[in-house]
Length: 255
Image (cartoon, rainbow, N blue to C red):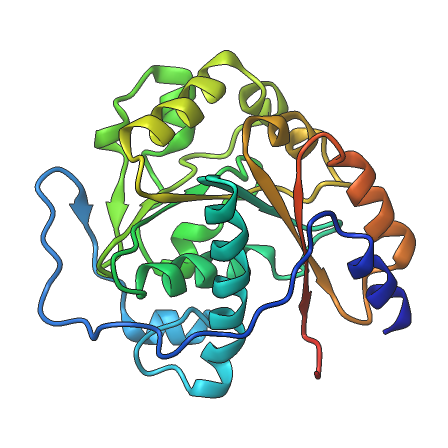
């Protein structure tokens, strides 16, 4: 645990704040959108994938409420809108963290969130919510598909998902392309009041994340307690040094 604690202290701009109250208003009736496709997620799918819902136990939801408070405080203080979530290695919980942070923010009053699956090598957000993964980001980057035709609401008010689409072998090139930068600029200006969260590949495994990170306002690193080494955390920070870092999320920590 000591190596993780030291890594946390090295996180740029890391701050601690107490969590706020309940997640937010109850979901009442089906969600209706004029242009966005609505594919309500099955509650059993959400529960199986450990994605927050109204039935989630308080002990499960509380860590994400605390994380939400920390993230929103720092982002709003600096007028930042775009956040990339990654991890040093595979299977450290970054996608579940990205999804639950997005849900937690969306459930707060007067908040809207756009969650983008930018892991073009191994997309997973659509599976976590139990919605269709195609078309998606890949179609925007390769086929010039309209962004409005790609967005999906998983039945959670104020949360919109842009799935990744089909896997892409040339994901590094796509993520650092001018079209990708245009997408980031487009969603920031089209949805000025919306928080935008990107789920990215592991930073040490591929070049994708380091190539894309300069396009966003900040990054957040997810590490698995007892698995991630201090050296891996420091290397991850080094790879992301050109973009402000909000800190570290300790996944599977006991306290």
